[in-house]
Length: 475
Image (cartoon, rainbow, N blue to C red; front, side, top):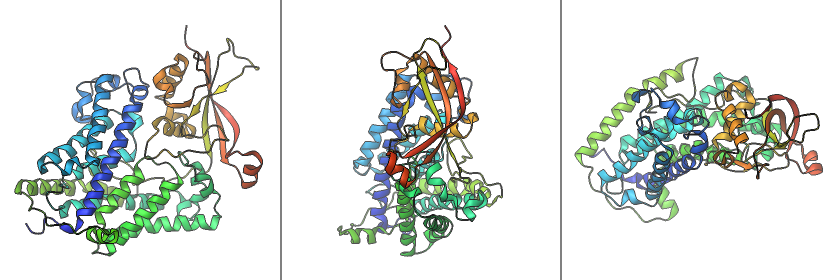
């Protein structure tokens, strides 16, 4: 079928595949370095307890069949190694069928992790990576031209990410319609970055421009993805620029980066190569019939499953970041349908005193990403995902979000659990665990320019209430 492949998108496919492999690498590293404390055998939400009696089709993956910490570690590190091989070009140096198996292995391996990750993996970017990774299985490699249908499916995924996010905003918090949400968002977002203080301190008229530009980028520009070139490339370029703006303003794991990767599926590869001064790409071999059949089958599957996200987007009760099947295929997306006006942070403290009283000295635990010490500049971590820090942000919104894991977290602090302490930036009890741990809620806000010059602090915080009274291990 002459129409099946389009050689002009060879560089676009190369960028998509290598960059997606890099995101997979970050995802597997995140899993390998954090799983023991979060979902390990002695973790806060252990996988063995979660999968006990769980039907395989409810959470398809290898860990429903067998789990041990050693097995999970080997699985995650193997996924990281395979991802690194893809980034290095291994998938282009092997036969087409081998390349497809490599991409399919990455998808299956990460699906297995997500489906037992519970609360720690309940984010839209997990499904987004899996859906993009599934489509990458059918993109082919350097031995054949990029399949037209798969490039269109990637644009369809990108459209759902952007348009779904735009709709949820217009239907949600009225501050989006009033163009005032960014009066608050840079300050109250889950994990601010090193530039977030400066974004927040922009003049309010510029914040209104930011919101208006966001509406255009999410509700108008995505329509251009389905138009002929060069309009589609321009639309993709606008999306890439707006996503880079979001990268600069906060930490959103790999959400922005996968969105950027998908945008390259709409960029004219020949034009991009010419702009970069790269030599013209030679002709590729015709796609084998078996590959064409698999691509057509995958396309048909996506078309059939698309009825669910389309119905969701058309619904007045639109939901965001939802998977309609256990394989995380053809999902619905969206972000920040509502925006917090105030930032509440849960501060965790411990003491080594034998008894707790008015004069007890409490020492604060430091987290890597979430705000703590008011004088500490927020750090950049994305695309690496600090899962505990993100859930601490939710705990500050409501204790209900922390009901399943906060108690086990405190218990492990009282035990001095090494795996849990590795998730933290600072352990104030390096020699022996504390005798008591407590948690209190503070109201945080960014300092003003004057306060910043006078105190050197990035945050101002005020104690509001108790989150957890002092607790000790049962003797």
